[in-house]
Image 1 (cartoon, helix red, strand yellow):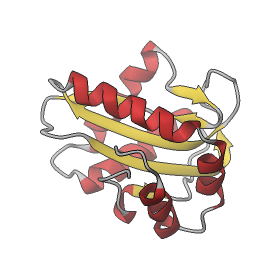
Image 2: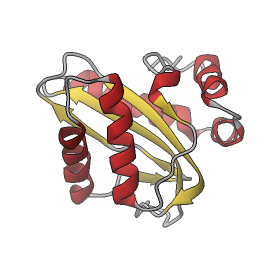
Image 3: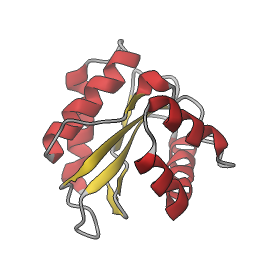
Image 4: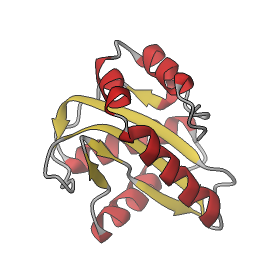
Length: 151
């Protein structure tokens, strides 16, 4: 089960058309649910990580992520682009499914475990298909809850 992701942390129809725009839109979503961290700070962390290398892992998936001193637990949000967004993914295909992960600076173990769990969850073509076909955020929450993966 993917805990921590409620309907408030889901953008089921991202409006962005570029990598920069989607990072802004996802930073705004995470800021709304984590108001003690500014949208600008979240965007900056995500953008800095993308400079190291794209977090687009292929199969229409990206997991933008980073660490932040002011957090005391891992924060996750989800965004979906029906049309797909060019994101410099490893397979050079557009990205449709985005998970943003922010973790406390000192949480290397839980941070890496969460990234690995997300990758395992998204490895299933069935899960990816369900996420793309979901009608709304409530349906997406149900898909997250139905998985055996605990994130």
